[in-house]
Image (cartoon, rainbow, N blue to C red; front, side):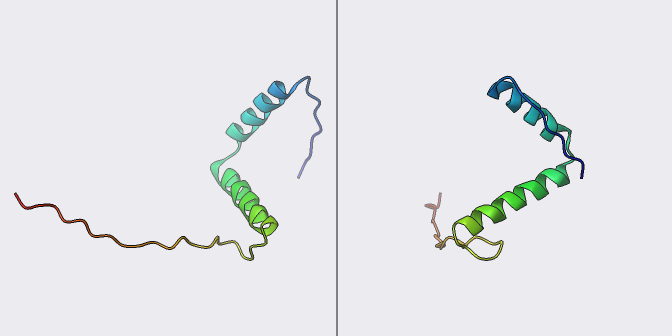
Length: 67
């Protein structure tokens, strides 16, 4: 992997360069980066594994009045 160091005059210029970089990267690379960030966030919260705990869901049946 080749690394580059760049200097920017201000934060806005850096954000534009960052956006252009990620727009030029293939989708699978962006998905892998998002997965790595998610895993790191779960580890910071003390959650093990790469799957967050699921929310408890209830199934509700709504009946419509017949016409």
